[in-house]
Image 1 (tube, rainbow over the protein chains, first blue to last red):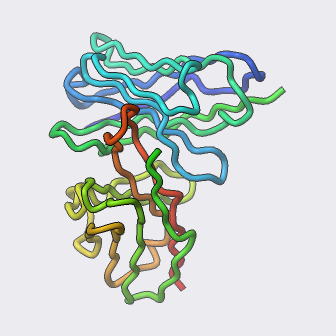
Image 2: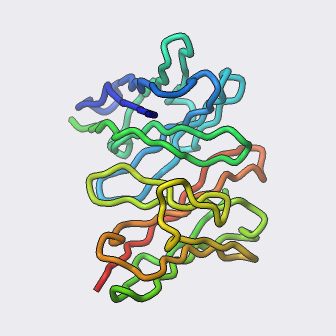
Length: 120
Length: 110
């Protein structure tokens, strides 16, 4: 059974940093691209970042570029999101999601999300 | 950047057909994917690659995509279908590729 479990969320002050983790199980993690997607309270889904299976290709939304860094450790079956210079508008539930193999870029499995609150 | 436009809300009576649109410039040339999200839950994929269904998704859910509009169609709507629905594409047309979601449509079952 595919499982994605996010952790690392919490309350942080503006300008602060946080590192999110996503533990994957039930599939060969090293063979799949992964995404981070976020959802502000009461708002829609927003794509944040993508990383290919071997970390060769990395993409960011304009809203986080230069502040967030996506990475992965295939030996540990883990995905990460380092978030720096956090702003109030970064407050959201952050989901990690798997991209299936085959060329089409969508998310077939999602974690339950971790809440990040940026507030003084 | 690429923009996807969805109606904020759609209402339908049980047993009827709901159609949720997703507009985008020449969206017919892209693969469109649809997610269902119920309150307090993570999104669930219901249609991928315009019209394919993941295993476990009822045949009542179908999709189409042509021109500037993609459509998610839910036949014989049930109370349990009440949720937010999001369309999504991967925009590789620029030098800054990335995922794009529509703003979401709240489906209300009357």
